[in-house]
Image (tube, rainbow, N blue to C red; front, side, top):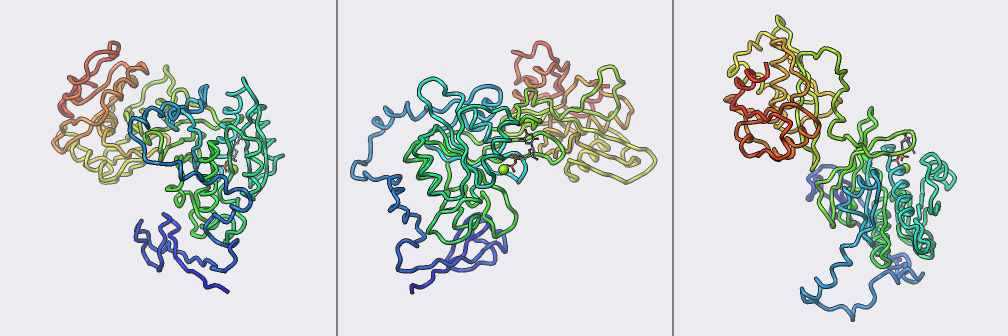
Length: 481
Ligand code: TYD
Ligand code: MG
């Protein structure tokens, strides 16, 4: 009998070490190092290297002709580069949204991991992507897309596909055995392969249960080899898990080419798709979807989706101001609500705004704008449950407080952009131009910005909007009230 090799793996970041550490030396999270025992038997089939599958013919996915490989001149490399830029296009509003996050389409031979909480909509998203890829290639010879699920039966997937009104060239397969999956998929030579999910598949001959760290890593490596040698793009779903014994997508981030995370607030139907890692493009991209009764739809007015739907006829309330924030490369308008109650001193409550930032802005308003807020209870709220993490929202917060305190409503076609300094001065924030142009495109009449930004902006595309530069809070108050 061979000896056992023992090692420890961090369930948070995947760092592995020959000894146990109370605090992971890579990600500094404590209590995440878990013990793994690897049987070192003389039976070569039981090796944990992932190469034992070679005997079954899967070894053909390993690069074989090493003798043909040699270092290349840069000019030789560049000549062959054109075909490398080719991507599988994803068209239509939904496809464009996915494409944007992927950096312009799906790269052949790439392995993409899609992570997210259970129930957020990963299976739905990937079934729709699968359908889109299959549809996009009706001309020419048949090349299907295969959707493999280790979680659901083909009937269950079929039901969902019906609900999504997908009727194209998709092959459904239910299996947990990676070897079996890849053999059957290779035979179909599809345009893309979806595997749902990494936690439910396993590789024979590798120890550990499905979902365990070793299986999850080995299965992902096998899928990566498959993608690279067949040039078939593989999309892999991974559940984000908090418990330590089931390995989550974080462990796999360094193995795969692209990592996307799907997020959604519990009580809204909006879903965000974010690139966390992308070997083929920027990670600054964000896709915005809405979960409807018939699947995910691209949100056409994403910039406005966090605004409450105000009736144009109804009276405008005091204490509301619109801020312009950025998430990745996208601009969102959000509404800040303030409520100032005179007479009840001291009490302050903030929802969606960092308390120390809000306290600072209130103090600046007391000192620099002469508002008697020390005699008021102040409540602040960001509409739609978002959390404001940018100083670009300072000015809107201040404006909302002024509006409530003075009981003067702000017209709802004014937006505010700017950071506030301790002297009450307005400061520039990043990507001023992009923010102002979004506001202009949405038909706002006026945008209040720091004075320094006004000059830098120019006038192209801003004919219909008044961009007003202000030096400090006093000037802002004089402009809007
Ligand atoms: P699902 O894709 O199964 O999530 P995941 O694979 O991430 O676990 O979707 C889960 C939720 O989405 C489920 O609660 C039902 C909802 N849903 C819709 O609202 N509309 C739809 O068309 C579909 C297919 C699902
Ligand atoms: Mg699912």
